[in-house]
Length: 336
Image 1 (cartoon, rainbow, N blue to C red):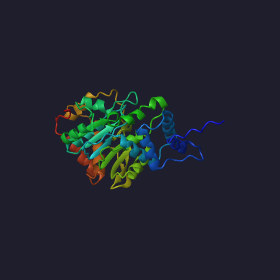
Image 2 (cartoon, helix red, strand yellow; image 1 turned 90 degrees about the horizontal axis):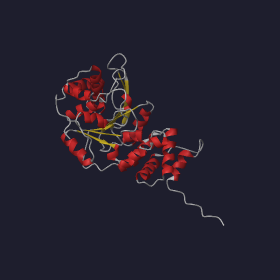
Image 3 (cartoon, rainbow, N blue to C red; image 1 turned 90 degrees about the vertical axis):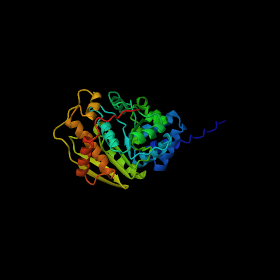
Image 4 (spheres, rainbow, N blue to C red; image 1 turned 30 degrees about the vertical axis):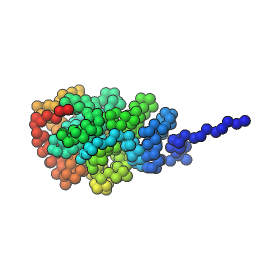
């Protein structure tokens, strides 16, 4: 007497597509990736399946269709927007280890000039890094815990930050598998593309340049009208002023690229200590630092250029310097 054959789990097909071998496996389509990600979000996947799925994606490297599909599926886990709207979606998922997080001051400068910036990110996944919440705390700013708070902050301050753990706890659980699997989750890439408030312009950065066209094409597939992605300092959306910078962009959904010249000459050393108190000094003008100012203004310029607020690289850089110099000193930026 033979035992009945167990019914196959509905998620098994997606593991099989990725892992059937060198000749029979293939990438997921956008729709397949979206469906699979939705099942993960709803808790319809066994732990063994999820581990296999994430590792197979990581080993082969995700395609733009897979990234776009997962972003679409995972976005269903994001808290409802509560009427919040933003001009700029800012992904902050890497953390900083060599330089202070000057991108925070760039975002706050844009906000001080009336541009609504919603920043979101993952934290604590890698030892020895400084994350956005810590940088904001040094400026007296607390993260938002709910989308209702996000809406209020964007209306009042034109800036709001929310961690992935509060924005989408189900996705944070997937991110937290890194020390268990020993591999970085695809969510480090997908999270950057979520754009929870559907802002018309999105800025994100990569650590490894080969990911730039993946981000660009995935966002094009998602219908994102305006985008800038580049190799940022430490993997965050922050210009490295001592280096030329290639930016891949979307303008009205059309893909392109531009090469930006270096802003400073000479190499930049790793900062001896990431003293977050310096951020407030830079904002108030008590501290002057040419390199920090170049990183901040250079980052602002990328936003201005590819969100349609500047006509050229030179125009963007000129406007960005003016915005940084005219940031309403010593404006309080931290009322919770």
